Length: 65
Image (cartoon, rainbow, N blue to C red; front, side, top):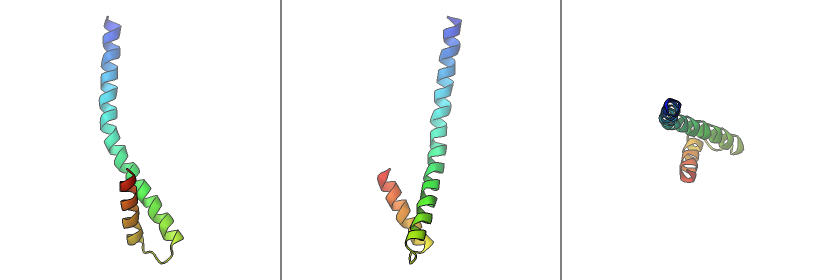
């Protein structure tokens, strides 16, 4: 019975930490995706400014989310 209690407590703690870390890493991943998209669009379309490319990428990525 005592072993099951420790295992249950471990899983509950792990789930709580994963829940909080998802929000943190989701935002980080979104920023990195937008940065990579901005760089690619700026390289492909030479007449597109970085600010315009960033706006386009934000719209595209948030629509696909």
